[in-house]
Image 1 (cartoon, helix red, strand yellow):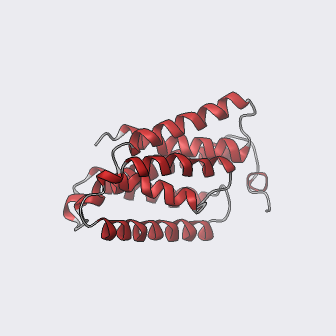
Image 2: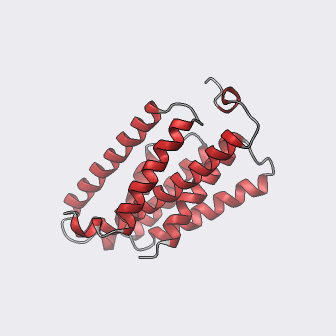
Image 3: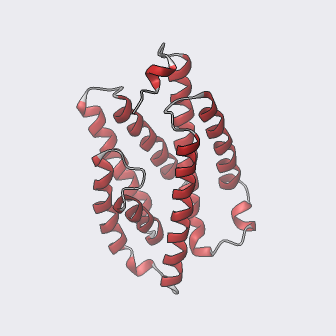
Length: 195
């Protein structure tokens, strides 16, 4: 498995998310370029992986974590890739799809938990929490943990892709939050406006 593309997806996703949420860049071509790169990278890592493309489709279809209309457009790309990858489902597809949906539900519960634990956009606590996530993701991604744990074989590659995406997403998040908190000159109230 190529580690580069999932790591790039996570980093580009977080960069685009921060650019669009915080209006850091006002030049439209830069924002549109990030969108194009993100869809290209998602396509590359989903090309021969039914369960990863299916996961992207389900997350986009149900607007999971989506606060920008662009993310909804990923549903169409993921749907086409999922249909293209149907021959790659393998045996026991219904069981595998059920396990994939269960993993997605677990991911969503963890994301909701983090959002409730740290509702603010930027805080020292959130930085430390994300650093702990980075360490955990790195251990799972780069150690033999995936081989030791009794994960079904079909799920190891999509799961590892997800871990690598979250590793780079969290890393870019920590860098962005640290910059905003310590170098931007903005106060916490300016960084975390009331919604």
